[in-house]
Image (cartoon, rainbow, N blue to C red; front, side, top):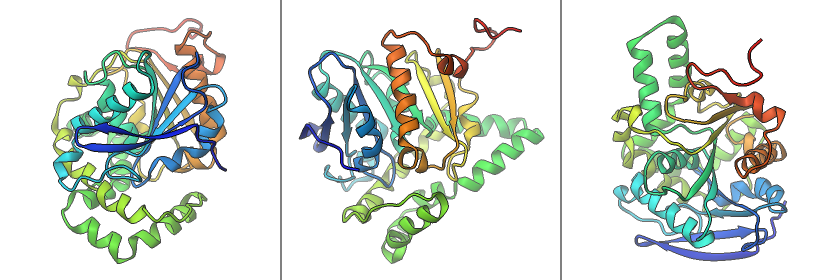
Length: 322
């Protein structure tokens, strides 16, 4: 599918230039949705979803630093969360200077989104956040520590399931290993692996090797954040989590217990893999995003969205008591 691009431009942010695309009509009454990609992707991963949203919204995608057509800093510390937040703020201010945006993140784009909405770098600039699902770094660290402190059979099963999925964290954190693996055939094998695991075809991209190599700096630059207490990272921004139940990299359990960090929280599941959520069933994901954005903008809550709302501790939602 080809997405009609209304505008392509570069946005400057703290020493880098970010490649930005806008879909749909900017400057009209429609809300702005900013889609942030993960690793080892670039903004092209969002094309099927952006195409389905662009008829109703002003949709923005961009290559994060180190990916696609954006600048690739060499220093690992340049990929720390504060720099990612500054980049996102620069994009948001450029594409929607007078109105908060609706943020959507996949994989590391979701991790970055959590970093943005639980801090003050984008305070007042984000109307809602949809996470497809990559956890907040601090929430993930707290999730692990809580289960290690109380190793019940359920907690042990959850930890074992996530650790089996988390091999890539070690892979990304050890200096030199990612560069060696990607250069010695990993870049050729990865698309084949994802296609066989999820049935998702990845088109050849000449920038893929560089995206993979530079993107590993995200893990090393932000590793120490896993040690921070989760309670320090709360948000009042309405959050919707879309959890792929066949995700081979992130356990859907992680998105279940977030009401301690989020005031208003909705959680939905989708029977898809990690990349399948945005590439194999983009119509469903686009519909979930649109429904949530429209509700936050003032539309009545649909029955599906109401069923997905997770009550705060001690709260009983209207119509949920029987």
